[in-house]
Image (cartoon, rainbow, N blue to C red; front, top):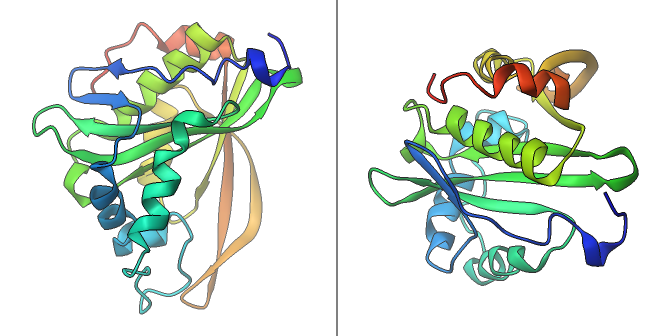
Length: 203
């Protein structure tokens, strides 16, 4: 895998289709949905964007700034940002991101954000499987890593289902409601993905 930006495997922005979820490049109409998702208190808590349950995420997002951000995602050669679309409704409900690419190590970071319209229907698990398949089978990565906070055991179990392995802990990484919360480090390697790729894509 070449380390030159011009040959970056992240330059191509695919559309990945599952049974329930569709991952595709962002379009202008997604801005309102992403603003709603980012302003959701549960999203703020689970992503560590807020430090108190009494403080809501900023609902006054500059729509123009968000439009510029999501409008420029297709131009980024060193990362992949895709909208998660609920195939049943056609709505954008969140995003998946592969970033922090290390070409020499064939590795990157993974994160996912799903707003209230997309929860509890398996969209997150399927979106994770779809983007991991792309990372390992198309791009040819060796390692994909993530962090998940200790107060989100549900997400940790979901990550384990698709092949992520717990590696360690960043102790007291977040202060929330006056309490310290650990951050758990997880990753999945290409050989481990091979053991999970054939499993059903639905939870």
